[in-house]
Length: 589
Image (tube, rainbow, N blue to C red; front, side, top):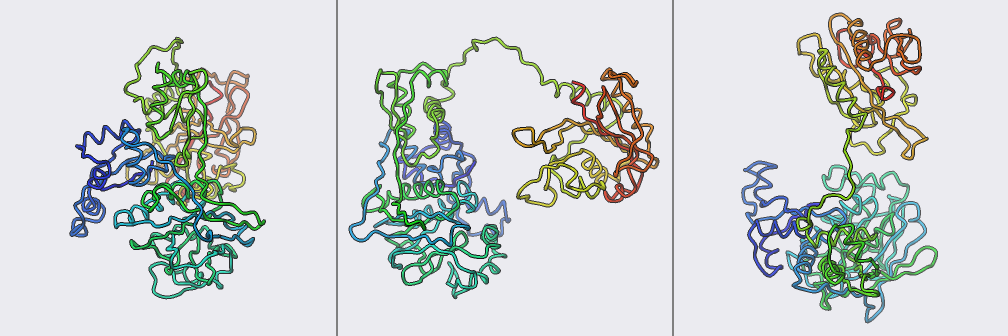
């Protein structure tokens, strides 16, 4: 969940009254939010960097409020205050309007070169806006919150805001070779080419996380005005020429991206939140966007739509008995203007452009439940009588855990993700033969794939505990993941049991004895028949030649046991012999 930091005094001033910390915490809970922390800038810096760095920082009290990830309209002070005021019925939800300019409409022309990089763009103008230091900071912070949230760190959408009075339309959104783009970026004193900027920003803590989006592309996106002045090089940096300040009166907003729907949502959120400070409140000046195919669209859309939900559906889903009139009132408090229509059981709900999270009737039902108050819903006995049972696989897992511990083995819990090297190179297997599920954008080399075997995790645990007295007898019962094209998600989990014995001698007989004990507990007798189990000589790249066996139970192969190959032991930074057993326990359900 995103966390919004707001100054307590500014918040109370905007709300028109003060609250104790406990009262405001309760208000947040009623509205479906959570007051996560009460702190200050000085306290935050002190925790993160020490008291010396915190000297001179502000002592102003900050409220850190957790906001649902889909409530983009609550990511700034303005939206939060407006939502709370409507919820407390102190104001009515404002009506947002798109207006045409008195003169020529601002135009953004998209060229076909952008098609393979960031093909979409939308734009709007906030005319005659009045910023203060607090409003300006909130404006910048909202953009950053949106970038981290719905914009997916600028991969889907990037926002650019510019002082319109320093520019001359129409504007052109195109793509050029990095060497052909040259401008003075925000907070720099001279011009740089796009290539030079990408090198400079590799050491910038804030901007380096966005470079990968375009750095390997042959062309970089760029926006020019009619005089050739660069507005921005999305999604990296804006130009310094059109930077906005507290004194800016007319703001040109452009959102470029790979997701057209999200770009429109982001634009709607920004203009609705800050049109409050325009000379004509809650009005937004339209801008025209011309696409490469010649079609022209006017933004922002600021579209209102209506949904009809039956009152009895809301009552049934929430578990309450409210009249349609009361339900309409509850929804109106949640910024969803509602009225009873038709046969008296239908509620017509108007969805404003700020509520992009309302997609289905269930979203409306959820808001009705929040407004009613979860704590106010009467507890009732369910009309159906059911008896809960433990999931059979988990029950078997728990029983085996207790008996494995009774056999002298210590349980470990290792990560479900590991490196490709752990499940392939170190075990002498090619990665393509493992059927591993790969993480598309791994944060570290340690978490590249979902594990296909539990063995590497146990061996890494032994390596981290080599100073412990011998022997080390470890086990784990957890899921592994294998690609499976027959499933709807393309992969399948299997519950495995893995045990290792690490000592000055291999201890194969101990691992073999453990297998016999497990089979005894599972009531599987030794024998060649379909109801029994047997081990047969086998080979495996992870095992010492001639010291490996495949385990068959109830007519199918369930795993292997044996003495690990010296190369495997060495690759896991171990120095003594080790035996292992790994089986699939699902066939025994």
